[in-house]
Image 1 (cartoon, rainbow, N blue to C red):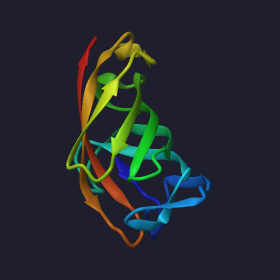
Image 2: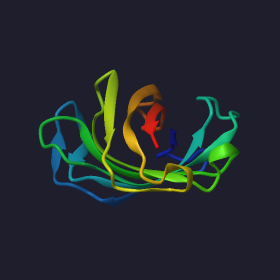
Image 3: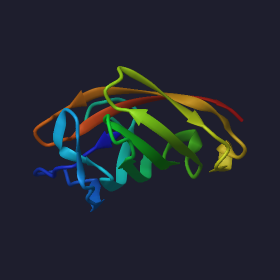
Image 4: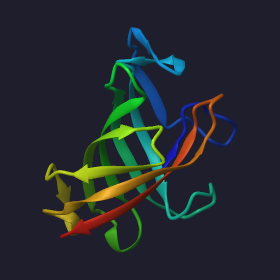
Length: 146
């Protein structure tokens, strides 16, 4: 998942801030409790920018903890290629962004196509993060029962 907060030539922003919180969070005075972002991030097979696209992560995340860098994700992972083309799953989870590996539970909040009635979880890891522009590449490994 390529989370592009700051655009660069050939790489448009895929994250848009829509609300600004009031209280700076510890360890990052530019991030505030209540900050909210809408996303339409590319999902690719691997972490490289040239890696084949498999879909989009669309939804929002917000900084929902007052005393740590933790976000609440509400994302629909829409698959646009391969055997899952046209299917999607919905992930709603807390993400303590500084943890090396984060587990994202998949409550039964949605899914369609090949993922209808899916349950399971995902493991989220930060592959790369640029603190100056806040762009990140996240690795998401999904474990589903359909």
